[in-house]
Length: 160
Ligand SMILES: [Zn+2]
Image (cartoon, rainbow, N blue to C red):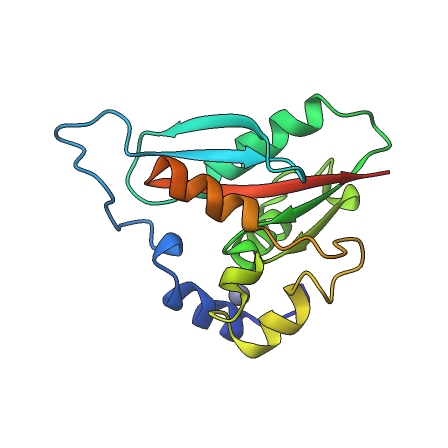
C-alpha cells in the first residue's frame, strides 16, 4: 500500500461516499437507493447496478469490476478512476478482493475529488501522477451523475 493507515483514515472521514451508514434515500419507501455505473474511457456506460443498501458499499464496485474482467481478454490492463479509490485499493489488498486481477489494475482518484484526499493520497493516486492514465480525468462520471441524479459512478479505461 503506497500510503499509511492514518492517512487513509483521514480520507475516509472526509468523504460521505465512504460513510456506509449515510442514507441517500429511504429504505422504507425505495428498494433501490441509487445506481452505480461502470463507465469506459469514452464515457459510455458499460454496466449499472442498483444499490439496494445504505451507503456506497464496496461490493458494488467490486461486482462491477469483476464483471468487466470477465468480459476482457486476459492480457488487458485496467485503470480504475474512482472518488475514493484509496479505500478500494486498501480493501483489495487487505481482503484479497479482485486478487486475480490486481496485477492488471492501476488505481487513480478522479480529478474532481482528488483534492479532498490527504496530501500523500493525492500524490499516490492523482491520475496525472499514475502511469497509464494520460489526460483521463474522470469527468465522464460527473456528467453521468449530473444526468441521472443520485448516481454514483466509477470510470474505467482499458489499456493493452
Ligand atoms: Zn485518499
